[in-house]
Amino acid sequence: MYPSSVKEAKAKFTAIKKVASKLTNVQTVICPPYVYASELKKLVTGHRVVVGSQNAYFENEGAFTGEVSLSMLASVGVTYVIIGHSERRTMGESDELINKKVLAGMKAGLTIVLCVGERERDEDGIYLKFIAEQIKEALHGVQKKELKKIVIAYEPIWAIGKEAAHPASTDDALEATILIKKTLSDLYGKDGSVVEILYGGSVDAKNSWEFLLKSQVNGLLVGRASLDPKVFAEILKSADQIK
Image (cartoon, rainbow, N blue to C red):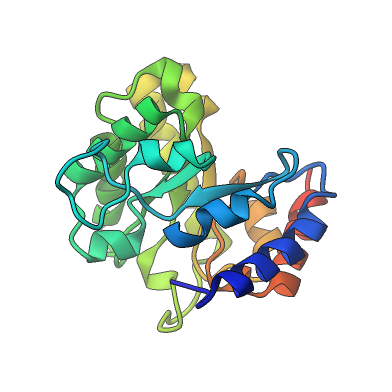
């Protein structure tokens, strides 16, 4: 829930765009709070830097005071939406609700950034089954032909935010990437390989290149570091150099 004003949001977006629009090997998606989406969309030129949303509701319209639908977001030019972020799950979102949002997002024509990840790691590997189940539940009803509109972001909750004891290692992220690929293969066969995978969790300018190089991910879901255009620019430049 940052930044605190539309003026600041536009300034950050403009500063990020100045760098990101010149990078030919990176797609940058900025997901602001709802109230800034329309204003930031006006600043979009071309396809290198686009606007997404942090969340949405699965119903198109109705008596759901305070909610914003996926079709509403699409109507103002939003092209991506984050679904199932760990903070939303902590606030009570179930796998069933997340699945409804994924299906509604597909119908609205948006690209879904589906977040999955464990709260803690156990020695018995139960967390791996937990992640696989999150994916299966969220993608229930999604057809093979729709998979190009799905991106899966792995975010280990224990590695997120100011209270994080430590960031996940590249080995942790690689293990999750392999699991996600296997789960998609089990569900969709070779068609599952079109789904791109992101890593999110205490990503910064110092460690971003390592995750991109060593964890077999296609990109990053950046949190706090994205609020500083200079730091975010360094992350984008690192990504652009990796072929």
